Length: 219
Image 1 (cartoon, rainbow, N blue to C red):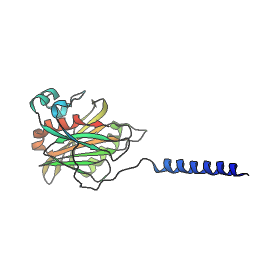
Image 2 (image 1 turned 120 degrees about the horizontal axis):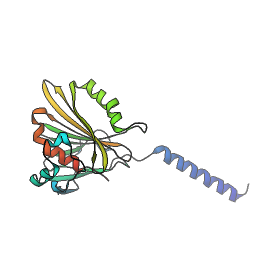
Image 3 (image 1 turned 45 degrees about the vertical axis):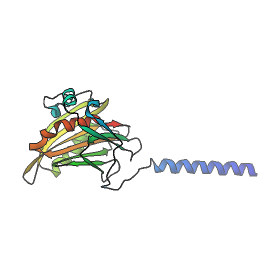
Image 4 (image 1 turned 60 degrees about the vertical axis):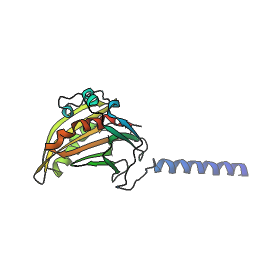
């Protein structure tokens, strides 16, 4: 075997090894320290939000256009680029504190008596969002929450993405709590936006929840 053949063979072996390692390693995940404050990228207002289908259980008789015209709440825009193929942006009111969650791709936004969380959820290729929620998410919620009760379950379209809303109530230390989980289909994983507050105060955040959900965009 001459030098040229050896060089060609060696180069081919290196290329094969490189691509094997690259394929095995998968996309690079950027892990942010839990609890680190997230800085907004820009400021916008709620009048720019839109949705292709109003969320019936959230609006309670208030259409998105009414919300937009009467509630010019200044919002901060945040971008999360932890997970390749799952980059997204979302807006929260400017008085909300936004931090990185425990897992890559997660955010936590707190205000008095209310919390937003954003997480990424892998949906198996042989399943759908609604089937996965019914067979995995809801049984888990039922098992971990006292007096769990579903109040709403419906698929809809959110900014040209397939989405599903699961609303429910449960008890926490004798206090009634209401939560809404909105699952938004993505290229790789689904985004899960969860809002939680005491049931008695939930309606006070109605327009805020609408605005936050309608601001979500895959990047």
